[in-house]
Length: 185
Image 1 (cartoon, helix red, strand yellow):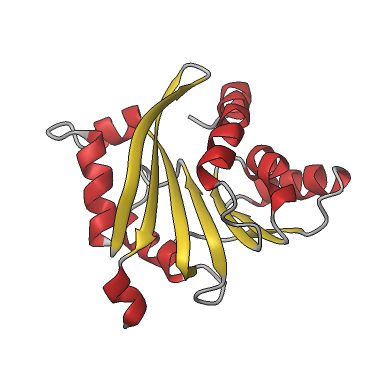
Image 2 (tube, rainbow, N blue to C red):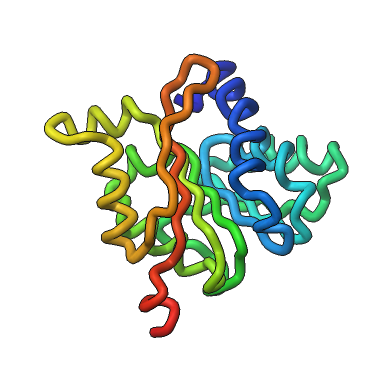
């Protein structure tokens, strides 16, 4: 998933779904970490004042930077980085999108904790994950249960979790918030 033309088609098809789930949320500050910052941020980056996109690959970051800046989205900052150690201050984003990277992560709960750390108290985390990749990771369990457990173990409350089929891919979309007790701490 996320590789080549099929991955680009999936990412392009995800844009309206993310925008619909997001609603008015994330108009100030939006963070994206995932496989297709160029595709996703080209579609939703214009609706936020401040946008940070991140990917571990220098090539992906350079391609995204060129595409977004040529589209006039100069407020979108693209950086190379790892989800386990984000260089962003705590409580600095309204919305964070983690797109198809958790199933391959060594420590997905730690990665989700790191993404949650950056959210403002009223912020939302959108997690998009490949159903089959999660199923391979947990053959004895349900991929939806696995994703819910990761979110809960990271101190997040899952508001919504639903399957979505885009461009022949079976994905899951979860929307989560930081637990109120964690915000108060």
